[in-house]
Amino acid sequence: MRRKIVAGNWKMNGSKDLARNLVDQVRAETGALDNGVEVVIIPPAIYVSDVVEQAGSSLAVGVQNVGQWQSGAYTGEISADMAKDQGCRYALVGHSERRQLFGETDDVVAAKVERLASCGLTAVVCVGETLDEREAGRAEAVVAAQVKEGLASVGADQWSNIVVAYEPVWAIGTGKTATAEDAQAMHASIRGVLAEIGAPAESISLLYGGSVKADNAAALFAEPDIDGGLIGGASLVAEDFVSICRSMPAGTKS
Ligand code: 13P
Image (tube, rainbow, N blue to C red; front, side, top):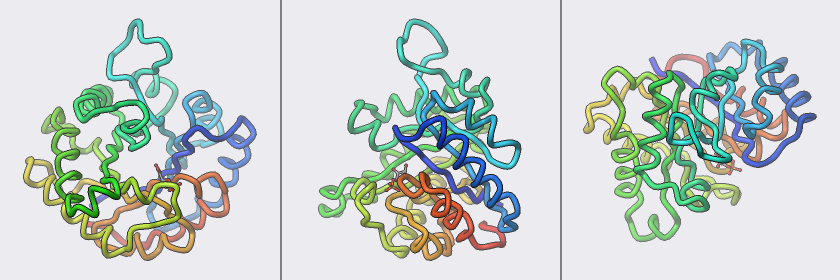
């Protein structure tokens, strides 16, 4: 049985006020959901402790990035251990904005996954192709390489702490979503790659991200290999985010 997850990535948005009010509302309105969805809030690191305080036990909290080192002279970085210490259970790794704007390579992604796995946090490893790569017919190959290289350090007993998020770069923040069929096809392909590298593919949750909104979430989540969503813009509006959480069908994904 796979975890069904809806995670809100606030990116570099938000405030103490949002951390208080939005999280309060999301907790109140998702607490009673009986569809088995795990709701995760991923604020900027500076607001993690505010969100953890408001989240109570019904919402999980994550960070958007961690450094690939254990500790030391890395000004500006936060470590996986620190995120855990503050009450986080999740961390994003290799988001396309990190790859494109901060030069994060698959090797760096693998090192970060290793740090997270060693302290028991769930790594949400983000993969996805650009529009050029899709138009050149290389989408599946690009994503397969990111999955293989990014997960190269995962030990046999660490797979339960791995989640993969497929976020086509051309769909992020653009209002263009992959169709449910295209997203399902890529998720099935990713599951095939996971099996190929010896992972327990059927039990790893795969999330879709890229312009997920209240009006398209249900169609995406209805697909058999889409176990949840990684939500950007719509996670900053409580009503929209709650509505996306409600769109998860009841029953198991397996
Ligand atoms: P949008 O939902 O704003 O397209 O962002 C998706 C994303 O990058 C989540 O990590």
